[in-house]
Image (cartoon, rainbow, N blue to C red; front, side, top):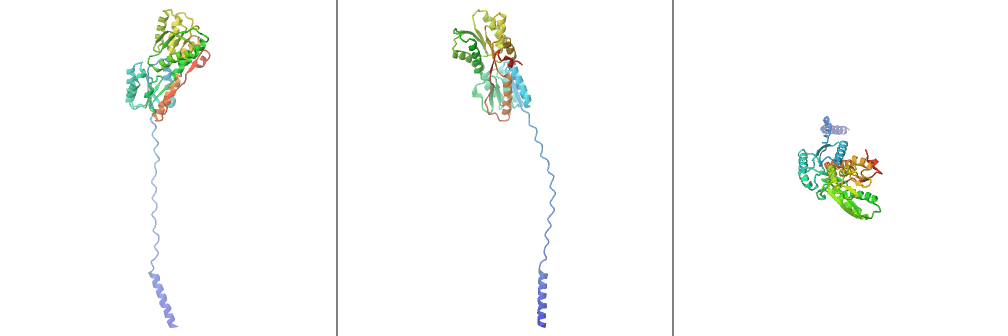
Length: 336
């Protein structure tokens, strides 16, 4: 019994020693408190976009081009773009200088109404890398690089065709040749050529024989057309109608005919543009008809194209604004 008690005491001592040798549990290391997050600054507001600036060079400020210019300015105001509009006074050198100045000022886009369509490449060279929207006077299509150079205007052939359609109705049933007088715009321009060719072509297609009594250029000018018509009247030649490439020349012709005591209801005078004065003349039974060329619409289309070009989004090469015939039947719709 004593031996058993002694054995149990030895065993208890061994367990005690083992328990003392066991390493104490290490308390988990305290994790450092998370550092307070640095305050985050609000992102800076994006800088306001630089307004688009457009340089405009117009061949001259006749009534039609002045209306086109007003269309540009009105559309620019609505679109929030800045326009610097200049007149070249029908001077190719002055127009080139204006374009050079626009480029030096770093304008984003240019709108150019060419003095002479043959100078388009010179204008492009002066503009450097700046996109150009040509308007109303169409350069050769070969210069219209997609995305950079475009043309805004109307299909010129249609204007002469509308004049021909009116005259075909006026002379319906006639078998004798139509003795015509024709005043052309500036020679060498696409609109002069197309308007002149189309009115004659379409009248011939309609079955009429044409007899040219007088045909010359009055360079779009009213006073020049009036003087030339007065000189022609002095010849005493017989004529049946007067066809003009624009309203300014038609109005000059009408002044000459009135001064000569000629009944305007018996000699139709036809023009193109439907300017305010031309529409009043149609209303007063003086000009037989005109063709509405939407000057303000062309101006607005220019700004539309210019914005796209400045933003690198221009894809169209042509912006067409349609013509409309104007006669005594609908002239009230075109009088402001």
